[in-house]
Image 1 (cartoon, one colour):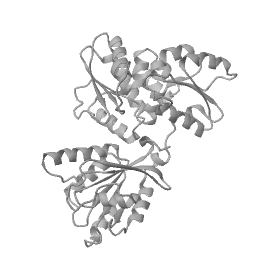
Image 2 (cartoon, helix red, strand yellow):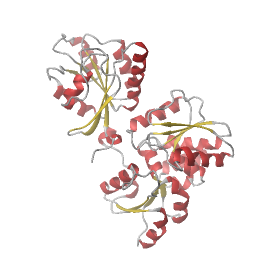
Image 3 (cartoon, rainbow, N blue to C red):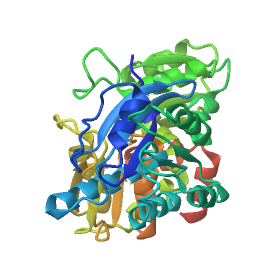
Image 4 (cartoon, rainbow, N blue to C red):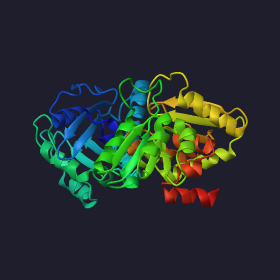
Length: 407
């Protein structure tokens, strides 16, 4: 089974047109992933290539259009290229020793502002004389500098080694989803309703990832539907350490789970795993400040077609309207179609982002924070709207403390 994109280290290749980014990607992957041509601007949209880069593990290379593209279409391509930075865990800036200038400095600044590790590659080393003083200045800044010739296949192994050394610690030591809340030899019950949007014959990704995380943590795991929870609890001779539910079943599961057993939802687990739980707890508390007519953005990483009582387009708007006591102006965004201007929104509500890497979710949180826009996620919103917020934060003492200090 392929590793999902959210578990892959996202490596973005940036640079001007015709510096050899696509050739470099083909050399790294040893496949003809990107079209290569002497014509500048051959790559028009980001090209993704998932692969295993041993011993690091699953990675996703993203080849981008040149940042010096021209014309109206070129401007749109540049916008797509710069958007890739938001989901980049490791940036590779490709240039030649002769071409480094303002374009490259801008990319370097954007990556540094996000605290993204950077590798500098001077490609076409077989065609251009090297400039030792430039390489030395970057080395003094502790930026890895690799000299390559993609066409001659030189420097490729050195680049692979640099990628391994520069991979962020939080990727190599990825935080747990749920196992740390349960512990080895202890049990968790996962409540998994089967709704119309669940793929037939499969569980949805956060549920599968949680099960695997528990197994990796040497914990026991029982999976039940919501109507079977009470019977499952009665059959156990020892209470579980944690009950985790789909947020849409929060009320029933909370009613069936004894108060001494900690309870939360998959979505709230992913607020911690993929985002910033503390920031999203504060964002959920902004629901109290909403009033009729306020603009709210509900964003979902998946681009599936909504079916029936869809959570993002039907259920959350209904629960929020009931809580606020008036109609809100709600916009929905799917996939990577996130509004460039979010300043008019009073609240942003995001899905758990299980399909993304953590950096992309953190980039959206950062943009909201910079503008002072509260941001939270589906599970926290549902728990707050239904009056069980404190119960849902029980497994997270630091987050619960934020709620208690600010309510």
